[in-house]
Image (cartoon, rainbow, N blue to C red; front, side, top):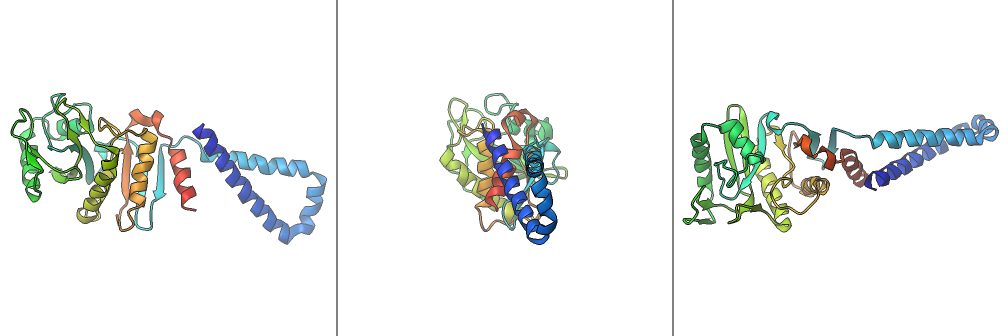
Length: 277
């Protein structure tokens, strides 16, 4: 239904543009065009409609990458790929304890958090712990959970960002979810926007013009109750609505191939370009 709606929207845009173009031509070349229009009006109409349909089909083709001007100061590239292949700065959603133990309970190996720990600090968890501990001295913890048997004991506010490094890559660990006693991670929809605002404020102040890549934050086991399509659009809107945000090199939103069936980039492109008209 969404695809049909976008097709009709693109078709109407094309028809409107072609109508305007024909009107302008008619104003200047009416004497030359009148005989043609009188001789074969239906052929001319069919030709224009065919052009409109071709445009609508082209505009709604499946895309793997789009670029959007979210504001005068922020551009976004959205594409399918491997987040960990990104250069310079990569955002990694983690829990409020900034845990580092991948044991399928505290951290699942299937999450971005788990894959990050294993890929970049596998066999050297102590180094990751050391960097996190040093960075978190900048913040006051919400509490120290002495009764927590496994993982870190200090809990930090959602939206807290901790920077760690591995080689020439910089990682911004974002406290996205709270850790429940049943080993479930969650963040409420009402908290999600504030976490994103905190993240982008940190990025603006600390990235120093470096390229920043983020995943579809909240698409994993976070508990955010939104479809992946709406989650992407919500993420983009949260950037666009932050009037004072300036990112010199823009932002990359890297989508995992596994959610390709859930995301329609053509639809997202049409939505934002229509709003920006």
